Image (cartoon, rainbow, N blue to C red; front, side):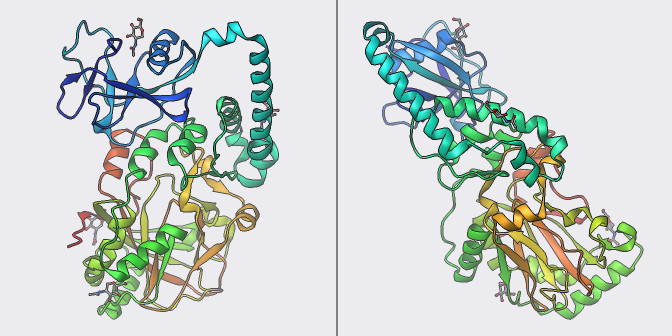
Length: 464
Ligand SMILES: *[C@@H]1O[C@H](CO)[C@@H](O)[C@H](O)[C@H]1NC(C)=O
Ligand SMILES: *[C@@H]1O[C@H](CO)[C@@H](O)[C@H](O)[C@H]1NC(C)=O
Ligand SMILES: *[C@@H]1O[C@H](CO)[C@@H](O)[C@H](O)[C@H]1NC(C)=O
Ligand SMILES: *[C@@H]1O[C@H](CO)[C@@H](O)[C@H](O)[C@H]1NC(C)=O
């Protein structure tokens, strides 16, 4: 029946013929085209380099419509590269071999209609259009009015002027998509991004495709959760991280804490691999701290991280950092921001008590780890006004007693706290999913992954 497409999977590079077609991610008459090569097999997203109205019409006919109203190359990435397909329309017959192209192709999307109906029943079309207009109005009223306005931009973004063009582009793209959206539950939005917890795929399609990093973010952070670790402490840390983006640790159980404190103090006072910013307000030392090693080997921490980061974990490095400043303007990390790289964990170890008021606690906007930020490609997209963040989210403070600390996801909106009378010396280690930074650098996204200002380790953690 369906000789209009030939597909090849990347798994074994064999061709197959399509036995079923469905539309996904939108509604019964629109969406991404997905196919099955085997009635019992997985649904595979169709990826096309060229996707015209004629191509889309073939797909619409396969699902029972007469023609396509629009063809979109949505760029909506599918989770597993292995499930991705490349259409090779030039293939002369079933069973031919075709090239597999995995990246930089767009997901083929369609919006279908039945031409017969439109011509035959004018009244019905009129009624339908009326209803569609009403529905569209409702969607805009309930979820959209006020979202991409100049006021919202200026209220939330510190570098609003630099972000204005991207904001307008978003306004147009999202309006356009919502106009075609037929009912269903829309994801929750803020001026910073969209909540990915309910329907990651729909949220990505509607709100995140204008981000040049959309595919990277979707693929690297869209992996399924691996499930309980059977280590109660690790699972509790994971739950805190998943819910809030931060897990406070009362005591890391580090027997070498005295040594660690001494090594960290020597490091920031030394002159090897030390960098000083803001006239001495922040001092960072990138040297080996052998007393940290037992904590880096701690299986409970490794298990919690593996569950949160969805698989293998790489410890990229660590540093000792001392905050001495009380001059907010001098310290750019004092602006609310996210790190633009998606999920990554920083683990802070307190080598002295960190006072919640006066000790420069790191601040984290709870739950913002679940946001898909509209844009992550520019610095201007990632710095936010204090009043907006405090009005919109609950704030957690990274403070507590010596020997404890916290783990947090730098995808959250967070900020350093330069205000405060007491210096704060902490040891900070950084972790990513093993594939993240290699992928970011292969794709030349220009992201700070891993951070440069640390003693580099690039060590994969064992969880067993
Ligand atoms: C779309 O149709 C054109 C013209 O028939 C063809 O050259 C092209 O390969 C088709 N693309 C896909 C993805 O099927
Ligand atoms: C967003 O789009 C609406 C309607 O298309 C327009 O009235 C509004 O000015 C746009 N907002 C911005 C910030 O461009
Ligand atoms: C590992 O870390 C957990 C959580 O911080 C802590 O409770 C435990 O004592 C540590 N285990 C060891 C062996 O250090
Ligand atoms: C200084 O940093 C480099 C890498 O950035 C590292 O190889 C070297 O061991 C560091 N020096 C000390 C004393 O830790």
